[in-house]
Image 1 (cartoon, one colour):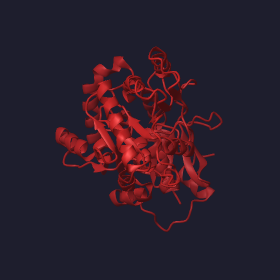
Image 2: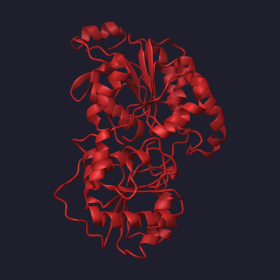
Image 3: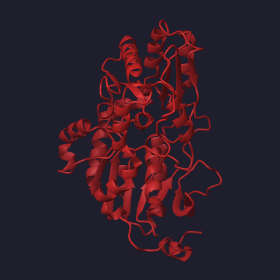
Image 4: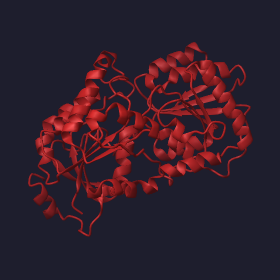
Length: 414
């Protein structure tokens, strides 16, 4: 099949870690395969950059344009230059070559690219808000945060100029409504479609054979990048309070990031060496096993667009405790499958965990409310939902493109 849409991915779908926008890209490629031609920063140095290549996804041929790796060699350190800036520069540099592919439909979920993409005409454009929080306002680069208001206005003007046919949003419905109301002058009557990242039910599922939880030594887990915005400090301070009651309580962090040294330093200061472990990034199957083996899932984030990790925890039947971030009220029903903690005080977060552990003793390790809610966000409905919103993705009866046809689409391909 010849590609229908150019997909701009700020992460490498072929390489871990695979959270956030990259997780969405993987789900999109699994659903539509060669209907997408992918532009991404491949981390594999053997992949040529700067031109369209014949690659494969799940054993099927797919278009790939490698813009070059954006990742630092040490993923525990923050890049000197923000990845968003590097990605924008690469796309601007390669856009004429990218546009040489005879495909006029475009998908993007990177706001920093909007001002660049208007340099070429597009037949149809679909944009996804990966989160409705201003990414600059909560940047890990403090010196950029004062540009937050300017960035938001520019982003919305650039988006309006591109005149997208479809607007998707990974956020809860209440936040979407508030965003539409405050940005109506830019949206010009267009509505945002609720379209969260999903979970794969073939990977994330409950283990019905698990024993009833024994809570003498509770096991807790947090999944995500080790960055201040994920609230690891709040989680550790709450854990220190909980250890007074449960001396052997365990908290596992699955992820890595620029705050790992600071996190480990606080673990030492709070004397939690025997209670905390950091496992780094895990492949989905291993992550699913970790989730099934734990008692509670925690989300201590300051801001979230749409927590994919929380959805995956629900799919494993977990009882959850979360701060009041976007999406939490779509996924957690207080005193049924967990608790939403309004305060960011460690004492209140610790109380939320205590209440969740008491709930866990009542309902058992596999929470049926979590499973019911998770079904709404299954990957099984992903392709159909997107096709209904954006008709250019619908499959036709054309045959897969031969190498000759590929070279016709892009004569510079080697």
